[in-house]
Length: 265
Image (cartoon, rainbow, N blue to C red; front, side, top):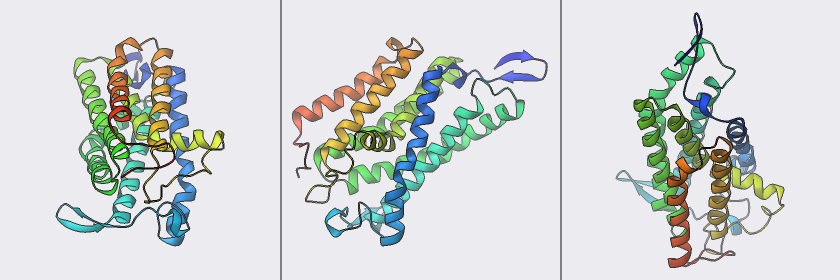
């Protein structure tokens, strides 16, 4: 904490975000609006992926914690867990933004932190792995969907290390990483809307998401992370997570079957 005036304090954590980083965070959170058509179709037709049978994700029965569960149910739980996690993280960024100086806001930030750590984060992680390892079946997509929760675990642990050391920059940059990885799907959709690409093929003939989505989503997030770290002059310090994500992408492209227009089995 940093003392400002008597009775006023300012959190030393997300205070370390640059203006560009905070704007990227706001953009990423607002990008969730891109999911409104998918949610509307799900509520109306009970499907995920699209209205017509040709664009449905495959609805299969999966084993989850010893129970047989519809893949559509897992997708719904995953979407809900991811959104609640995103709302909580975005709230934390707002509570400790540069202009927030109220003691109650800082107290709320400290109270919400353990709730995220011990409930929302673990629940999201469980459903994220259920999606990548059980629902997604094609090799390239499976790896790229799995790297997201793995790197979010890395980011949260790294943020806790920063908190323990009193390193507000490490804490802030790590939560910036976690949030952008969490919001990679809506950010990708918004960017594709801008370039009028989302109307193209999103599902392959086997009902799996086409590999192009995972590829371009990862590249977009890497670009935003690089811009954010560069804006606060801490790019070199945060090269490790960028290199890890980039290396997984490069190895997946080199070693796994993939196609820009499909999703090979």
